[in-house]
Amino acid sequence: MKAIILDEHGTVDGFKLSEIPNPIVLPGHVILKVCASSVNPVDCKIRNGMLAGIGPELPGILHGDVAGVISEVGEGVEDFQVGDEVYGCIGGFKGMPGVLCEYALADARLLSKKPISLSMKEAAVLPLIGITAWNALIDRGQLSEGKRVLVHAGTGGVGHFALQLAKAMGAEVHTTISSPVKEDLALQMGADCAINYSQITPEQYVKEFTEGMGYDLVFDTVGGICLDQSFEAAKEYGTVVSIAARANHDLSQVHVKSLSLHVVFMLLPILKNQFREKHGEILSKISSLVDDGKIKPLLHEERFSFEDVGQAHQCWEEGGVIGKISLENTW
Image (cartoon, rainbow, N blue to C red; front, side, top):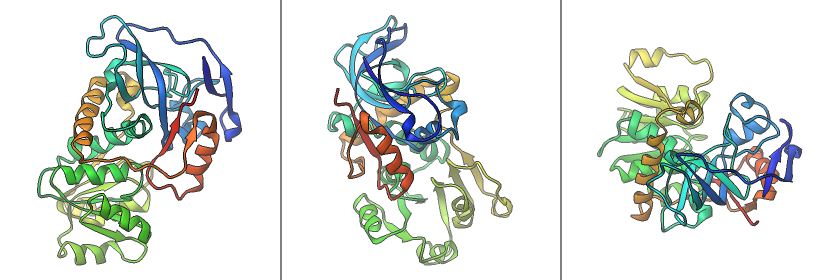
């Protein structure tokens, strides 16, 4: 079968079109005819070597998000059958080949039937960001109706999904953005308030938009100074959840406000082979929300095929991406 292989860490020049053997089905697994994938920051960081330690041995296949059709079912798999259209985040990590290929082996626990209202390329952008947002807002943040939530970077990959998920849960949702175009998109997706962080400080927007009280829940999807500003924006006894906490931070405000601080690493069940069924369960719930019209993926306007993956990585690394970059299998 055809596959895009990464020969070595570094630039996008390491991606090569190759012919490799088809995968063999294992118990508890299925074989997918791969239709689409997407670009996540972790894919770029594995490629450039920054996160090589969690990536597959090279030469290897990258990318985890997938949407496709089941072509073969392994022993012990009861929830799926040949012909099912499914999606999930299934590989591209240590010990697990990725999905930039014609056929991929997938642990059935990591899959769910895709939303019937979405195309393959739309569904393929959702698994990693959807599970991440669910872990942050529902599992850790204990989000409930009526809560006031701040989602940073509301038109980004995780951010645009989290914004819509929080709204679907009945929250009052505010989000930070950086331009009038992104403000319009955030409001179209349901944000109650879009805050241009380049024009106003956390102290100012807390005073203006929360009567000086702060937010019940703040979701940091950016890291760095954004996490520090999240502490500033949270109300006393509030909750901050971050997906980018690999830095040094002053926790003084966490202490004096008695904040709860949580960190989400969505890949842990995949890497450790623990609680993988939770991912499939979350994706099933996401499918229902999508088909009920409560969540819609935001796709970056440029379209790429698997053979264009190098260009897609460059697009993400250059910045300015709105939503998620999709990759379509044209083989």
